[in-house]
Length: 307
Image (tube, rainbow, N blue to C red; front, top):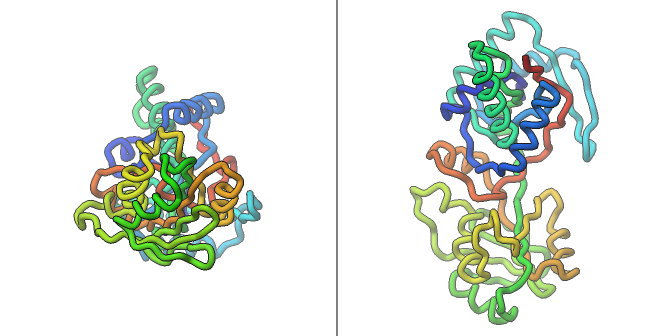
């Protein structure tokens, strides 16, 4: 990926696409962090549609000895190369700007907080093109992005017995008992863990082809099962549902049901980066907890110091 300072103006104009709503409390935390440090230390993770010219420039830069290497959480290695030749910087800047739109993959709160800080500082002392008009970013080609599944657990069965729940689900899904953990094999298939047993579910109805949000598996599960059968309302606020990142494995789903914290668990097929881009291109929002990007970018390896 390439690290750079991205334009707040491009973000606010929609050229750096958002696909999620932010939470005010988390956004406020980021604003306080930036203002306290007078710097951004946490980069937003962006994606772009893979481009051979950018790839060539990054391959060239990463053929040199690295500036630094650091091991982060889960033994993830972070390696940084510095591009300090003016011609290469100009070529890389032109290549990135020629990509057209970028997409926020992970870092909506960081981006929104940076925009708020920029607006406040500009209002206090208009200065034209200032350092606060940019925010720390690292962009990766879409074909290199790794997205894990983002699974769901529900705390109760909405008054149903396991048998009654299976009968209700069978009205909208084909159900198959599974001899082992049912990791979905393709989009449209779901794993379900209930009362000590795994099942495979496949939705019978296909969503509207022209609706990129309705086509998402997270939407299909919510609209066809979680809401009408289990009574889960807005997943942003309903306390009966919780979310488990796929990096924890299906074993975590089993543990939460077996120890009584939840009554039922659902395993989903990972959302693809192209599905995310389709939603963003349409100017729409992803449902909450649709994507789990891994590995995560580390805070503090790079900083964008403000005024």
